Amino acid sequence: MGISSLKKLTFFAALILAGASFSSQTTSAEHTSAAVEEIQWLSWDEAIARMATEPKKIFVDVYTDWCGWCKRMDATTFVDPAIVSLMDEHFYAVKLDAEQRETIEYDSHTFVYRSDVGRRGVHELAYSLLDGRMSYPSYIYLSEEQQRISISPGYKDAETMKIELTFIGADHYKSQSYEDFRIGQGN
Image 1: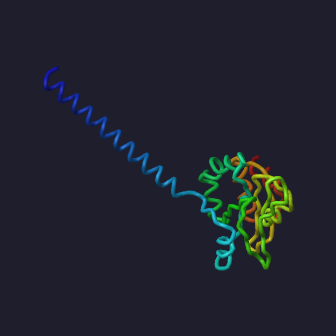
Image 2: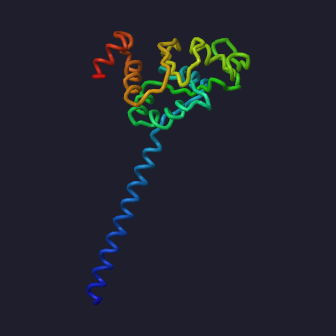
């Protein structure tokens, strides 16, 4: 191989390395910005405290540590950019472990864990919010006045959750049924 060929090979190798470096920097930057865009999950107490100064609807994700569908929601639906955006725009998002042991004080009531309810026990706030229908995952939508709008049980893919969050978040529930709204969305 002559010097001319060696220079060409060195030049092409340098181009390939520079391109790979640029590509990995772009990919790294994309991952960094995506990691920033996630749902800001709050405790019940944090959401209620924020309501005092900036009222918003509350979205409560009632889950358990052993629930496979709850974990799937966290890994898929709740990381979808459209879901993150809708949640941020319309709701305070709350994670509520239905089997948590910590006491919650709310609205002149003390909610505690009850080991004598169900097979694994249950937290009274989760039980109250779900009207005793303990199914995981389940989602509770509360108005700005902290009145329950709806209970929505079960796993939801991103498209279904997007429709639900829009229906409640943008107050469509005040003027039409969910079924009519969903059909109007083309689903």
